Length: 392
Ligand code: FNR
Image 1: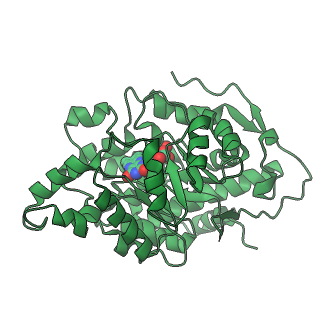
Image 2 (image 1 turned 45 degrees about the vertical axis):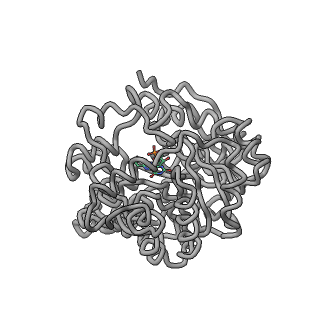
Image 3 (image 1 turned 90 degrees about the horizontal axis):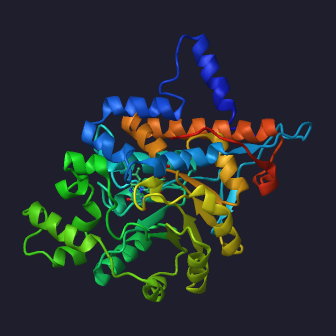
């Protein structure tokens, strides 16, 4: 069986022929390369977050406070990284978290299509954002045999929400991820300082502009009056009135697996369970929304309350060991955001695939060298608390 760690060997062999790796192999390297490539306000939109950004630094630091206990002579020379999620046997536990501007991060302005193609090629599912530069139908058509999920920002127009879900179902997405933590925008100083927000400039609104319900709310089609369409979007995007009372309606929208993203408290997990959801997505949105909310530290209690429901985790995953640690804390699958966004920025589809290969090679090696051959071997007792590194 091919091991993900074999990717390393390929890099060394190419080096013998004089070829360095095409892209950086660390998160810091990816971020620096993306900073060079992206227009500076777009880079800040991606790299930045809420408040003084200690929330997103804390996401990374939380991983550093865990170590993995190595076991020797454990027969882990061959590993199996596959997991089961909603009836799909996935080759790895990784997911591509929704990034609502990846569409404009690639050179060709079709980053959602590039991400979908990378998903098809790698078997790593894409959670496609509501905010895409290409319509969800075209993105779904690039996913190949890899199951994809559609992420819904619930608009304050129920007919539009229903229309988006119907379209996602018809396009072949295998689950709906409703993001709850963005009913309004967080306080993001970098974007405020630049006085810029990509969607207000009409970017990444293809799912709205192509939607029959959205279009029916406009006096002129978006092609004729994009300004008015963008203003309508701004007025329907947020949904401050959404409460647990609306979960029955959301649940009733689809028979597909339904996940709630942004859940970090066990009581919220229990309410979600009671409301009939199929999975929990524990995340603090990469530190971009509610400032100071931890993520990884809350994962174990979320997993306990989920009581067997699949739990997806993201926020702060930067390396292979981070993936292994999140799994050991009980995640069923682990999402990455900025790392693949930077990959898309510097290399389009190839960049995303490279980032996935690096992360999977490192996760695979981390499991092997620590003596754990299967995901099921990763239980909480393989982790030990360490002092970590102060982040300031
Ligand atoms: C996001 N995220 C996000 N989440 C979501 O549900 N819908 C979206 O459209 C977006 N858009 C988005 C844009 C950008 C630029 C970033 C960085 C993030 C949050 C994303 O899905 C995920 O929760 C975080 O990115 C995970 O944290 P890391 O991996 O970036 O630390």
